[in-house]
Image 1: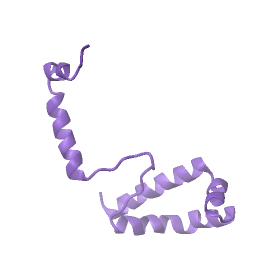
Image 2 (image 1 turned 60 degrees about the vertical axis):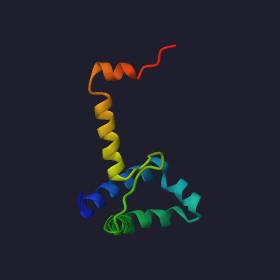
Image 3 (image 1 turned 135 degrees about the vertical axis):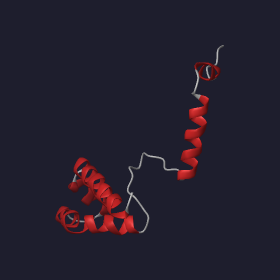
Image 4 (image 1 turned 135 degrees about the horizontal axis):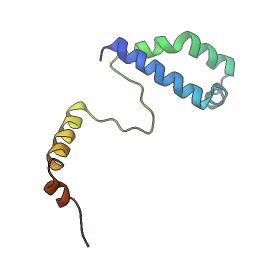
Length: 96
């Protein structure tokens, strides 16, 4: 994914989350007025997402766990091997 694509995705995620949480709530959390948050969202958020993406960063929800791409690929390889046959899956089931 290019930095521009990552920035667009981050911007969309941020807008959705800001709408879900509410600008008034965010303003209260960070100690600014709701119009200040509104101005930031309309004037600066997209550019902030571009800066983050160009720096190799991305926006993810706080309840997500991020892992290195090599670690992810290793986990996929292990899971694929472990779950490739009914016998392998049955070995994962513990019986009392």
